Image (cartoon, rainbow, N blue to C red; front, side):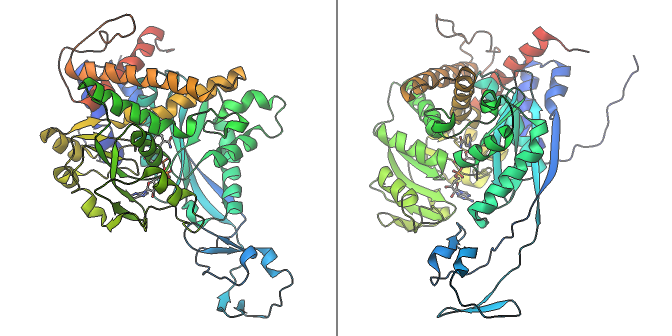
Length: 500
Ligand code: NAD
C-alpha cells in the first residue's frame, strides 16, 4: 500500500460544504468509519443535462381583456396568446405589431426553441433506491441539489424507509410558463432522465414548483410504450390518488410536522391547543401544517409568503385563508397578500411577532443569525428544507429556542411516499386513516429516538429502542438527528461490507 499525504489546500466554502457541517460534526462524534465517511461526503452521481422545448415563452405579454378565451393567464401575471384567439378575428399586422381593439399595440413574439438546465443528483443508495423531490425553480444550482440530495439520504434513514437520497429539477420559473409549455418541458425532462431512474433505482417526487399533475406527466412519459407499464407505477410518488397516489400524501409533510409538534408538547405534559404560531410559506407544506395545527387548537397569528405578509393578533381563520389563496381564480399568484381579514405587514415585522412556534415552510436560509436574534418564539419547527443557517442555529441554541430539525420535521412526505411506493408494488389502495395511523407511529417513534439521543437517555421498551443510538453525551436536536441517520447508514456498510 502506498502512503498518501493529505492536501493542505483549504476547502472552498459553498452552500454544500456549509450544509455538510452538521454531517461532519455528527461523524466526528460517533467516530464514523473513514470509508463510510468518504462514501457519504460526496454524491454517487451528479447528472447535469439540458432539455430543449419548441414552445416559445411570452413572459412580458401584457394583460388583455379583449379576447378572453384566447388568452391563458400565467401565474406571473402575464398572458399567453393562444391560436384560437385569432379565430374569426380580423388581424392587420405590420412589422410583427398588431393593434388590439380598444387595448393598444402588441408585439407578437415568434416561437423559437429554448434550452433549460436540468439536474438529478443521486447522493447515496446504501439503504435503498435513490429518493427525492423534483424542483422547478429559477434559483437552483448543482450545489443546491447536492445539498438537497444529501439531506434526503439523512431523511430516509431517519424516517427508517428503505431508500437513499436524490434530488433534481430544472432551472426555470414555472410561473412564466403556460400549461402547455410546462407539460412539454416536463415530458422532455423525463425523456432525458429515463435512463437514469426507475421504481427500483431512483424515485422522484414533488417539491417546490411541482405537484401531482407534474408527477402524472412524469409517470406517463416514463411508462409510455412499456409492455408492463403498470408495474412501473412506483417510478414517481406524489401522484393523484386516482392514478396510484396514496391517500394522505398531499397533506403528509404538514401532517408529519404537526405530529412532531404534538410530540414536543406531549413531552412537556401538554398539547398544542391554546398555543400560537407564525408561518412562512403557504404552499403545500405550510397551508396543510396550518390547517392541521389549527384543527389541534393552535392559533395562526401571521403568515409570510412570496407575495406578502399578513397579521391578525386575534388569529387567522385558516380554512378561510386557504380558500382565499386556493379557491379564488383572481388570486393567480396564490398568495396570502391582500387577505382582507388581516393587517398587511412587512416581512421584516413577521420576525417581531410574539408566538409560541415559528414554522418556516418556504425556501432555505431564511432564519439567519440576525433573524434568530429577533424572533420571539419558544420553538422553531422546520417544514422547509434547510431554513436555518449554521449561524442561525448557533443563535437559536444560545437563546435556548428549541428546534425540530427539518430532517424529522418534514419527513412525513417521504414516509407517505414510501407507503405510496409499497401500495404501487402491491397494487393496493390504503385508506387515509390507515396511512395517517402508520405515519403518526413512524414519525413520533423516530422523533422520540432523536430526543433520547439529544438528551443521552437511552431507553428500551417493547416498542421503543434508543439504546443503540445514544452515544454517551448530550447534543442539540439537529446533531442528534444526524447521528441517528449516520448510525443507520453505517450499519449497512458494516454489515453488508464493500464489494471491493
Ligand atoms: P410550494 O411551492 O407549495 O410553496 C412554497 C411557499 O413558499 C409558497 O407559499 C411561496 O409563496 C413561499 N415562498 C417562496 N419564496 C418565498 C420567499 N422568498 N419568501 C417567503 N415565502 C416564499 O412548496 P412546498 O412543497 O410547500 O415546499 C416548501 C418547503 O418544504 C421547501 O423547502 C421544500 O423543499 C420543503 N419540503 C416539501 C415537501 C413536500 O412534500 N411538498 C416535503 C419535504 C420538504
